Amino acid sequence: MVDVSVILVSYNTIEMTKTALNHLESSSHNLETEVFVIDNDSKDHSVEVLRNEYPNINLIENKSNVGFGRANNQALPNIKGRYVLLLNTDAFVETDTVAKTVQYMDANPCCGILGVRLIGRDGELQPSCRYFPTPWNLFLGRSGLKRFIRGAKLVDDMSWDHASVRDCDWVPGCYLLIRKEVIDEVGLFDPRYFLYYEEVDLCFAAKSAGWGVTYFPYTSVIHLGGESAKHQGEISTKSQQIESLKIESELLYFRKNHGLMGVLEHLLLDSLADFIQFAKDIVKARSPKKIIFNLRRAMFVWKMFFRTELATVATR
Image (cartoon, rainbow, N blue to C red):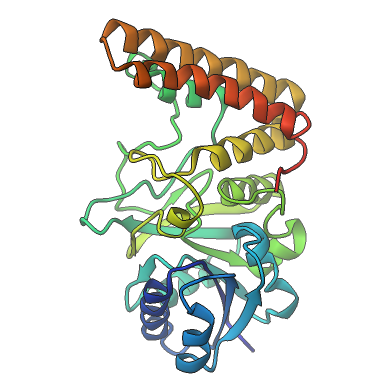
């Protein structure tokens, strides 16, 4: 019996993919594992290198970039593990990570999804245990008004003790250990998400079905972040996210999980946040390019709402 089926999606990150695979091999200990790498039409000879240097992995070669969620889904018909581990190519596990997390889930059958402590290349703790996004908490974050609202459950709350096990809403997908029964019940990723919000949506579905989502602090993963996305579009320096793909996924998520009224509430508050930032930039005498940015962003969000047919279909 296979204990863990590991899925990695590769996109122009061959050196990091090799590092991730090497770390993974030393972390499994006596567990029986199988590894799937889905390559999204990389241009850095990833397929050739993986075939030559890692003959034991299951390699799926796409002829185009089908997106992160869809690529992960391609491995599902062939997996045999009791657990499925989604691992980013820019996420490097410790020598005990896989063994410890499987041991925890074996001992806690109500835990459906588990994430771990994430550390950046600079050694700083990254958000590892998050609240679900809502129109209100996203508005507070984007508008800068969060400092005036005490007790608000912001998506990234770093104020709590990260040294203890904690139930949470969702955990980042760079290291996501999932019980196979969860996938059998709710599926893996909604293929409409090209990039971003896949794991948020999955955790929402799992919790709605009664499964627990857990943050496990007793092992760490080094997560670089944003490496594959560099090849897909312009990344904002602050969030390392491609704005257009993030906006589209956000709209799809709210429409799917909160209905038409939920996505409209998000649109109105999101636009209000843009106008607040626009006013701040004028008061602070920012550059014209900076001042106009938030107005252009607000218009683009509404444009995406209609391009996605009121946030129901993907644009690619």
